[in-house]
Length: 102
Image (cartoon, rainbow, N blue to C red):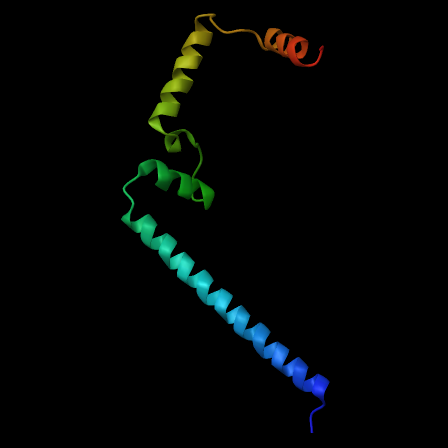
C-alpha cells in the first residue's frame, strides 16, 4: 500500500512529465513553423540574417550585408579617402565636452 506522500509524488511526476511532453511538442511545432516560413521566404536579407544567426556564414560577412548597407559603407569610405571625415580624437573630445562636462 502506497502512502499518501508517495501517491502525491507519483501524481506530481505524472503532471511534470505531461507538462514536459507538452513543451517538447510545442517546441517541435514551433521549429516546423519556422522552417516552413524560411522555405517560403524570398527575402534575401532575412535569409542572410538567419544564415548568420545559425552560424552558416562562411568567411567574410560583406556579401551577407544588405545592398543599402554596403552602399553606405562604401560612401563613407570614399568620403574618408577624400579627407572629408572628422578625426576620431576630435569626435571624442566633442562628445566628452558635450556629455561629460556639464
